[in-house]
Length: 297
Image: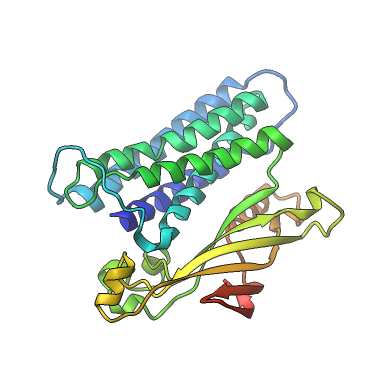
């Protein structure tokens, strides 16, 4: 249910954000909307979005039984790590859309608002398909997480006229996936999407935009959880896997966009890779204890 929705939103965000990044280049100084660029952007992103939705439908819904539309309360599941996946995806949907619109010389305020609304709206079809599928069910928690990601982008862009706090994602393989490979994944890439035990979501703070600080160095706070073979705590306990627990992190992060280059391609690559939290020292707090991790990811 939730796991599938989060995986789908992650795939959708990766494909669409990549299409935005590859389509858009640095903003020029013209004062009028570049209709040629805007048309190109609309056609490219719409095609990528349509093809991706069709693909997701074939993968997840084609063989599922249909039902009347209904909601499913998945908020207690997976220690809410899946909700952060939605939050992460819609933030970058919003960010990518706004950057692409600014490349078309759409005024900043309009581009930011359109980006935030688009980031939230493009996720709605997934919830609709979930709602009609007997295997899933629409989630109010997913919708709230989606809205929060869009609001994080819009709020910063309007408050500071720039982004100073970036959501980031990191993953490490765990032993839990082998217990339920059909649910938690079988192999690195499927586990990176499905195994919430190995996923950590971060807020990376660009400190130099607040005070004097190295431009390439950020402070990051992270959240994850472990011990989740089943979605709900009681299920894990009943199956003998113990009580899942939350993990909180405080550490450093690297801002790859601080690397100066004239290459447009390299700038795009650095921007995309910067969505990931690279391994770096952090302090973890979990189960009532602090633990230093030389390389947290």
